[in-house]
Amino acid sequence: MISYSQSKAIQIEITRRCPLECPKCSRQKDKGKYTSNVDLPVEFIENFLKNNSYEYIHLCGKLGDPIYHSDALNFIKMCKQYCKKMRLNTNGSGKKLTWWQDYYDIISDTDETVFGIDGLEDTSDQYRINQDWKSSFDALKLGAKLGKTVIWQWIPFSFNEHQIDEARALANRYNIPFMILKSSRWKPNDELMPTNRNLYVDYFENYDI
Image (cartoon, rainbow, N blue to C red; front, side, top):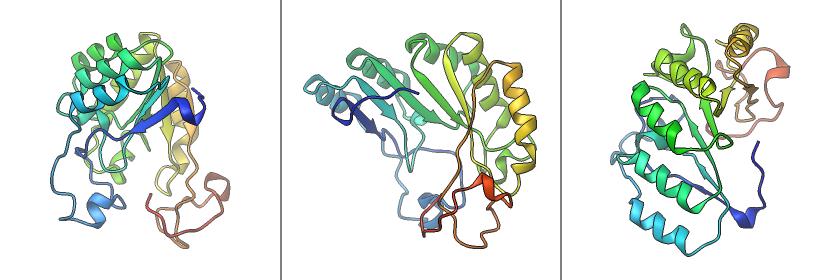
């Protein structure tokens, strides 16, 4: 994983756009509150990065997925001009492989692209509603084939915990690092919480997943 001191790193949410309807996302829990698809202007962030010295930029979102920014590729290209390293978190769903080829051409081999795919083809859309598993996994495989640093991130849920070994074997087949992200954002007796206590953090707080 890329690691930088806080003073040299910045995380930016560049858009509110996301085609998924994850049940515990604020977009779904507070429907009507986040109705506009807001994109940060490329020029605004470029001006900001020009006047600051950041070595590492993390494109991630709570309400939006960065790949759905209306000018995402140019935004990423601009970020790479001003920052040595980049990490992008995405579900990766719905984009054509030609888009991903252009994306991988922009980033370096050591930049990280983390795909949050929480299940196999028959389960991944039980929480990540509207996910197209095949397009996500094809993008992940392409990155690995091109020698990019791609990571399959898997949050254990009650509906996918039985598939972890199968998913890890699938990842190994394509030389893709497989990372379990244990959630601590459960409420007691949440039906989505995995039954295996080793697959979640034993701490309860009223957070969103």
